[in-house]
Image (cartoon, rainbow, N blue to C red):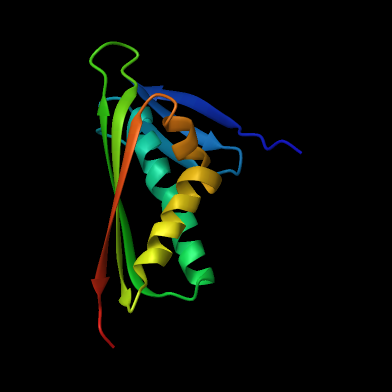
Length: 139
């Protein structure tokens, strides 16, 4: 069965909208970025969250001793409208004890090629580049 996505946006002022997701969560969007993130910012936020959830879930299944994990995303947009993202870099920083490099590589690969719908949507217009760093945390 196909999954659906639903949202409703209610204009509040200037270029601000309160947006409610189909699951009932509400946030404020603001193209001036004063009251909340812009819609385009949410795309890179969604990418960070989507790939992060995939990678940490996979690393846990691989029984890797991850103690901290961060995903940093940087997007570059076209100058001309509609100003789509043309290049996006994703950096994974995995901190843990004896975390295997191959496990991190595989978890990222699975996210990029199979599980993360956000990256698979964005890579239609943007060149996605991924890197990772493993930080040893000791005992």
